[in-house]
Length: 95
Image 1: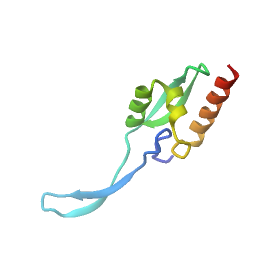
Image 2 (image 1 turned 60 degrees about the vertical axis):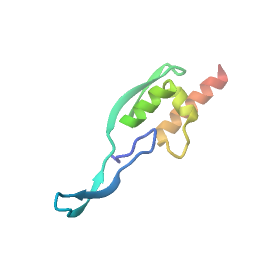
Image 3 (image 1 turned 120 degrees about the vertical axis):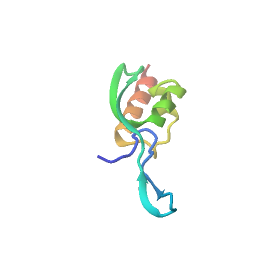
Image 4 (image 1 turned 30 degrees about the vertical axis):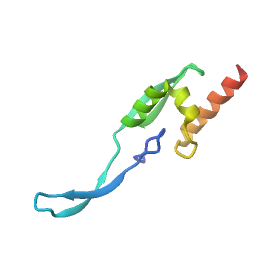
């Protein structure tokens, strides 16, 4: 399983661990990923996604999963999130 947020595309970063003696060694900064179930109001269904804590805050800020996916760029989304986005768009045009 890759360590990438399915909604924001946030992944691991690299940097240095710097000791008190200023010795530097390479390290990875991993995103804070959580397995969550997000509810789509349009579809009336919940979806399990692996989302970063920052991604969850963004979803809440934009007003839910439907609003977040409507504004999200397709390049940042995972394949599962893209399928959800297309299903929501299809349901909204049909309604």
